[in-house]
Image 1 (cartoon, rainbow over the protein chains, first blue to last red):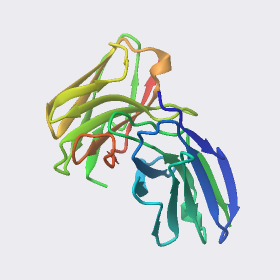
Image 2: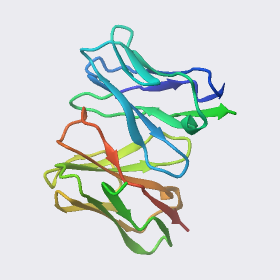
Image 3: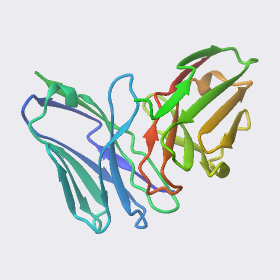
Length: 110
Length: 114
């Protein structure tokens, strides 16, 4: 089956600094690379995604970069704010499979 | 916040009880999913329905029984559960069936089995 790993598992960042979370996967058939954010006690919600024909996508302070050759994609958050504190999940998927990573707990230190 | 709703939000049940979880989506989506979220484990996909037809069952024990009467409603019937089944059960929907579709999650039902 698909092997998905997220690093780091926990991350503490000073408010205003940047945060980067990396997701590695094993299935070369994966063609959709989303990131979900789950705040404490709330539902997971998509924050950004990328398809396999694009290398980078940006939405304000959030960006995702994809390296299909190396089978990894990363979430970049710049100018972090307290409301960015949450657990972030990657979920690389293809036509036959969807696998979530174990999550990264991001804490923004005021 | 009202796109996908789940009831109840919290449930405590004994191992001999029978209960049902309900999910409703108001997004006009065609596919619905049940996930299990346990502490320190990845989200586990349990069942997938496409146009109310089950297309995926990820080796889930038979004590979990899904039902999808139409593309807007999804149930998870529970019976003779075990304490290790305690978890957050999340429902999700997507516009079309396919694992490359964005998942829209409900708020979840937090289940405790005693």
